[in-house]
Image (cartoon, rainbow, N blue to C red; front, top):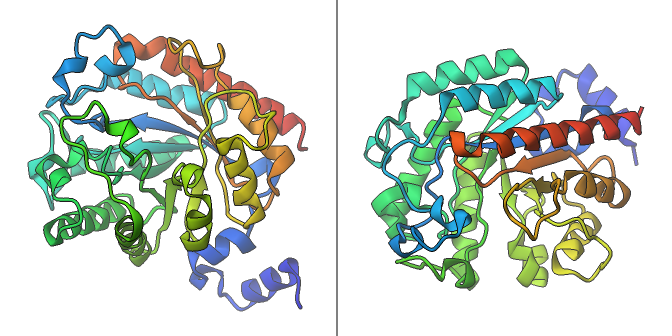
Length: 353
């Protein structure tokens, strides 16, 4: 049986690397330690939750910012400062939550007021690449986080829904010039996480998988690798690992810094993903105002745990999330998250020379 290095030499000599499917490249042309993905999620759109007016005045900052808004919530100044901060800190990828913040040619009807045109988005993507960042698209198709789809979010699993989603995915892949990855979200689709929504939709059993396979197929049809949040595995371990394709890139997310219990459902998922041979980009966060989270976020804890428990060839990198709109009230904590991630990257690089 030929080893990985011999296989790489053979396909390189034959000029076949460019024709190898992306999911094979991912595993064969593994990312060296010093070339990991250091990514951050940024929001153009923040309309992931239903318009639940009862949360507007409940005093909880987390809930108040989640109320649906028909206007683009974006400080261009903060957006630009964030990108510059990422570059200065050595980050190399930005995952852009697009949602309804773009006036798509295929479905302009879902756009909020002042949404970016497709030409504006393409111009920005070119600028981002010139800065040294790799832009990756994200459209969350979880039925609990798809309010950006407007009326289509209430048509889940219908033929009309499939057509609209297919057209949006194809257009976004074209706009991003066939990116390496396409983040599909697909998290928190359960009753508990929709208890405050005016309309709750939860796919279960075979229907969840039918729709999931549809999205995977649509992304792969465009020559792009699907990427998802891994939390479905928390409550459906055996089902998840029996049916989840290895081609789907996994981001298990964990926002605390205690990894001491290997039987904790989230910690166990990191370990099981590794055991089953999935590529991973573990995900941490920084929140200034959420008291149950670590004071300085948990990126360092996530990275230190991952490097000890995930094989280097399957540990493609790390991702920082913030669940705040890109607006001035959240400037301080959004930018601090990049600083903390940059510090973590420096530590990692120093320990993997």
